[in-house]
Length: 193
Image (cartoon, rainbow, N blue to C red; front, side, top):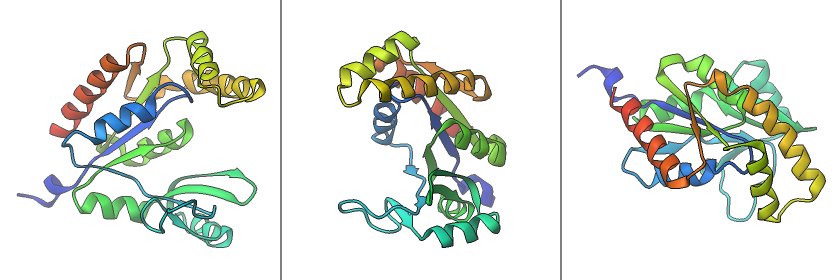
């Protein structure tokens, strides 16, 4: 058996806020598919019971910039000034070498960069809302965001949806059970190849 057959694969999930992506990923994580979340690096402080190397690697903005300068990230973003999030190539390699199938829950730009870097070793899946109107309804029904925040999320969603064509698979979540089964089928098929 050659070394490559033991290596894991990558699953990239992107979707506008309110589309049900996290629910679908949680569903997949409970299946016996050897799925493990990618452990991102961030400059924000740990929250609650978060531990370094478990939920995130916590580093300083200076350390993050050093990694950027050395091209250590497969993707990264400065969300706010000095608030960075990124995925270290070395961490992804470590997880793949251990035979883990690595799950990425990232924004559209990060997802496209990961897919570009890893090619056929990765499958990118874009979860689509049934429509922008339905997405607006879902966000309003959550009752967690002010109207202007919802409008920002809708504007962002329109951009993200315009990028869906750059993903290997697009799944419309108009029925959660059906969407979960569709994604499970796509993932199982991809991992078995």
